[in-house]
Image 1: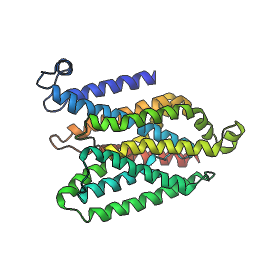
Image 2: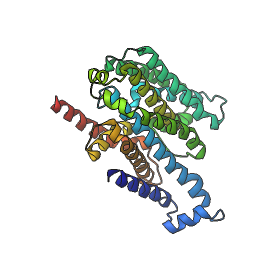
Image 3: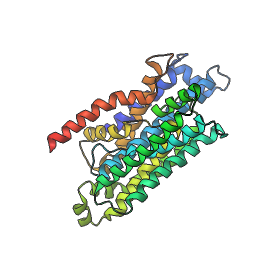
Image 4: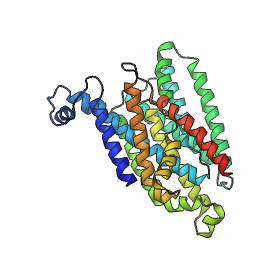
Length: 323
């Protein structure tokens, strides 16, 4: 039942994203615009609203699965892919291209940002090597890489002009504005492959959540499974960050919401629902950010942060009580 409710909520939000805006369209008008290339709103619906909604769903799905893998693999209920430095790596590349006005085609920018994100994630994984006995080490190394990347971004921004810094600022807050099918094509294969690998890993990661000793007793290769789960999380977060920027808190919140809805903490049982919840959260946040101050658009990262910060405080309070 939770899966069906989440799927229906996602379908309703995508429908709302296609209808709402300027101009506001009825569901019948949206269907006509989708079917008829000569419809006056065909381009607006098929080339602006629809790819943005699809990208939001894919990005939310990828971030949610990445968050679930990290939380269970690291035994850390507030872990997120940001701890692997991938969002910061993407930000460094984007800042360099935008602020320094490097001669890079606009279509190639998401791919270059993806390379930067993956490089940051690889640096974290190489720094910890095969030593994953202490998951906190992963968090500390990731925080160090993120801090170094953030320093680089600040240094690069200092070289920019007012115009390009504003563009970069919107990216650094996370945004789905002005995204089209080309951006969907960047994210789609990474999400498909990453989620597919996560499905194959789900039972092993569920065993990791029980503790390393218990997982070893169940025959799970702890180090290899944890490194693989972190690599998958890094790849998923890198793909999203390369296109949407560092969208915060979706990866943190979605697993917790899914666990409560499903009434289970098992990775294997909540994986599918977590992905659906992540898609719902990001599509809903983007819809709110697009409409709440119209015609001014709020970056979607602001909307997710306004919800995520109180939720994080609540999660930390519950964790402290449990101890």
